[in-house]
Image (tube, rainbow, N blue to C red; front, side, top):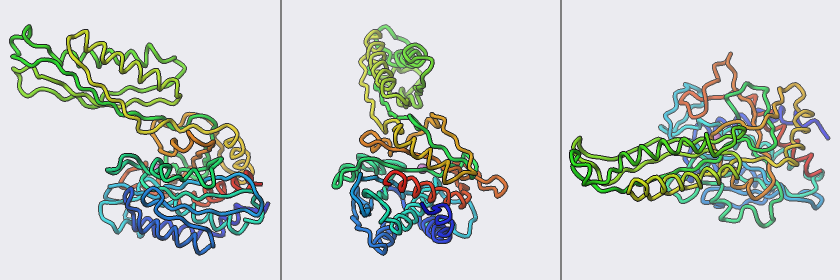
Length: 396
Ligand code: NI
């Protein structure tokens, strides 16, 4: 195989100029019209077959290799965040109040450069590459589902049927030169819960005539602490956090009801099932014991992001060969944060890897979603090289 790292390096000015253009013109989830338009134009210029409007503003490109083989989906997210940029960069956002503060501008630019490289090597590919430029990773933005699910509803995993996937994230928590490719879980699954405790309102001084939902809510918050400590194995990970409690209008009124909200985070599907089931049982059981009624809604925001062993093993091998100077980290759990690529990786064997991107000397080390977030653009070269080389290795 030719030296894909050098090819990635020689295309740096293209990748950088695309990234800076996207950075100057950020668009929120499901509004990536300009971004998607540029993506479609760039892919079409390479002769890649393009479908627009997949999952509202998503763009799909199909690149057929010379020989038959599996279909490998490459996913790049395109959306920005509602943040007022404060980097002072010459390429800062021109769309006030909207900012690429997570690095998705870099992901989109990496995707376009990978398309250029793979298109030049299509005679060496046995299989099909499906480029998936995804809208709205950061949230639902008023829709029922986020970008990954929206594209899946529109059939992004079919015609041709996707066999495997690769995706990546620039990672500003770690320095340029750090590469994380792990088997198993890498990001947590997230649930949002809403609980309504219905009692019987009354006078604060005559509790015997009321059924107090405030005391009941307090018992539920305490009881729920036993889920992680008593129902989850000490060797596994889960979080149950109540983040909102609302009820009452005055110091002398026992309210009619109390509402509570919060989040559950888990990695393993079995742990998730246990935690959700125990949460529902405890909430309704405690409420009933206290004479109240409980309405419990647990909504899945995203499943855990779990990397398949076979695909990840190949990417680990490729990473060590193509980036020999890098610091290679193959440890599992990375963050309790969530990522909607998890929906696709529930259906197909995938590998989601992380490219270290901070540079403390250049003060490019603010965290993701910070108004001063920016990364070392040399990380783009590592992302392009590893993604392209992994595709070449998998579709050999
Ligand atoms: Ni992100």
